[in-house]
Image (cartoon, rainbow, N blue to C red; front, side, top):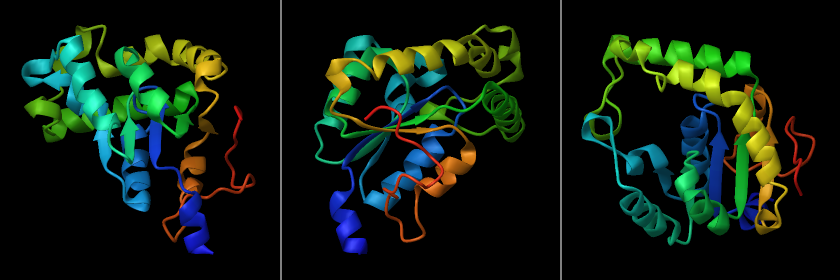
Length: 197
């Protein structure tokens, strides 16, 4: 049965959702379950001192990543959405409530500030950024509703009809998305739903 499930597993999975929804955590779990490389778009985008890479360089890096036969990619960058979504076989949308995501944003940011956790290219978060409109909690405040509307609209577009889309609306749905055996659960009664066939 497990071998049968494994044969049906997707090989190129895009994990999307607003900032702090838990994309990277879920993507790592899916990556391990599938035995496919995990690619974090933030790593490809950011250089030292929070310097974004030029768009063409960023797209080139992503193009190389999606050329692989199997992968799990997490991130929301519109500059490369066409590259990722076009090649993906499956899309997992973490569509959680604002309360869940905003509380995670605040707690995660504070934890990273306190622990001085190193992020992409040696960057670290700082409380000095609190006045920056792109500081993660403010970013979530500004983009959560817009992103929900945007994804709902985009996933109805014909160019993305090839995607098998799983919309997870609660963190517990992400927990049940993976079975104990490490294979992706395909039954429709697992606490999550496919909204866009």
